Image (spheres, rainbow, N blue to C red):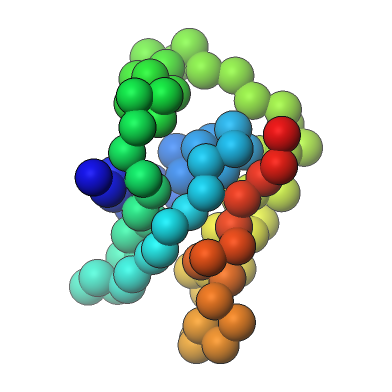
Length: 88
């Protein structure tokens, strides 16, 4: 099962917490980020929306930078979507 979101900051939070971005797509001018849906991912999404989540700020900044690179690249020549993951 796949979890999809167009929320850049949620996606950054998930990547910074160790979830690998599985793919992304541009749909009507919006980037959709896709992750494997697990129970742990569901819990983190819930924490995020309840303003109860935490993340290392440097890891979040790095994750957001990587995701922004994906959004703004004209062509995906290097398969960045397959490698966007923060190691624990």
